[in-house]
Length: 407
Ligand SMILES: [Zn+2]
Image (tube, rainbow, N blue to C red; front, side, top):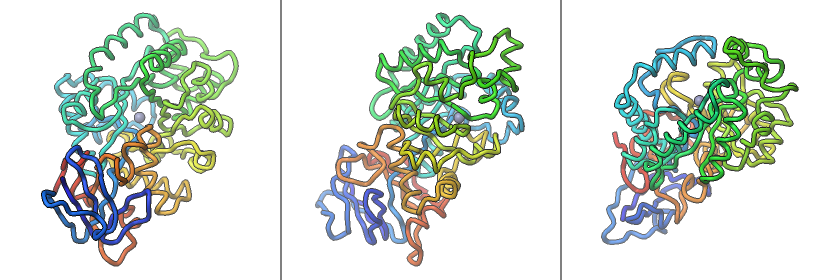
């Protein structure tokens, strides 16, 4: 067993505890949490006390692209579509081995910043492989796209083959999901069939939706950069009537309680109600939203309606380095959260968005012992200290009771 104690302990499910401790069993689960003197000290337990430290649940990053690790600063295109094409060109230069090394480095960088669970999207298959190899925790959504012009049968057959090849990585705390990429790259037919596939296999869905203004224009009146691109490929309007990106997904059966919507910037009240009704979650990436689109998502509205909301960094090619707490500071301003609500979004909120709230996101008996240790000074309130910190302030991270990072 392992027993950890620190000057502050932040369970998230309860107020911060001055002089708190946590006891972890050999399976990596929490068995006791509380004030130091109330938590047992079994004879055979290895104990460690951290003076000037805050122990909190491992953070949950609900939107990453870890296969892009190493590309930071290599694509600065101001036009989003140019940026995407630039990423595709960068990726073309990487081998399968390169992708695996990048994904592995990405997972380790997450651990070093206190993030213990990720929700990732990509098409190389490297992140689910890296999570598996490192015995990590997370959901890796494998992307599918057909650019509206490929034969859906061919696309789905290839995609099914890729999923089959990757499925053996989904063991322990690693899940494989599906990600029909975005309305400008995925036809309605492929969305529908991917959603059916997800339901049939009981796997989660991750989408990029309502991200760029031109995505809205694509479905409103078939104008903008994405419409121009598709028109040049001989593709006609995607909808007979103007429709929002979220409503278009609904039309194709994509929205469900296992659907995570990354970005969801350009949504109206009807869209937010649709997300709420279907039980969809939002992965909110405030700094990426600003960097690419100069826009903010209607976070306050999502919170008020009770749409599960996690925080995400997006890739390091969007904003580097990945810093989930910096995202939380921005989200706090947009949502009008207290410090407690903001720390909750970093942990339990992310777990709820991913459907993992019964296993992680808080420090409670029965949960996985996923913890991060960050610096504390005696004078400042602990939640504000957590929110003022950065990746470099995390000195130790535990995943399921196992130490995965220490400086
Ligand atoms: Zn993304």
